[in-house]
Image (tube, rainbow, N blue to C red; front, side, top):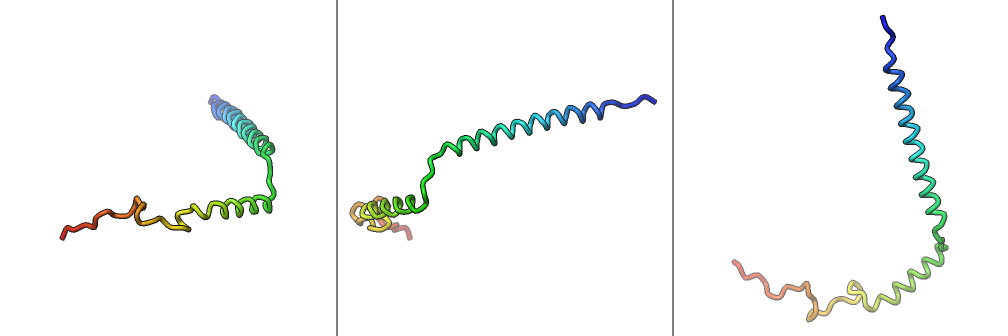
Length: 84
């Protein structure tokens, strides 16, 4: 009976593919970390202060807070449905 070498070859090939896949994943992870390291950070207290200031400045023109005048409301129905 002749020995079967195919499983060994397949195992070796699959390990090379897996190793190549691992290298690709590692490269993507390194690239992601480099990109994140280059991002300028802002302290939470500064970001919260800026956000609060922006919201306060924009409150006078926010339709959810001020409301929409009935005359200029584009979503108000012009005529009620009269089908009965």
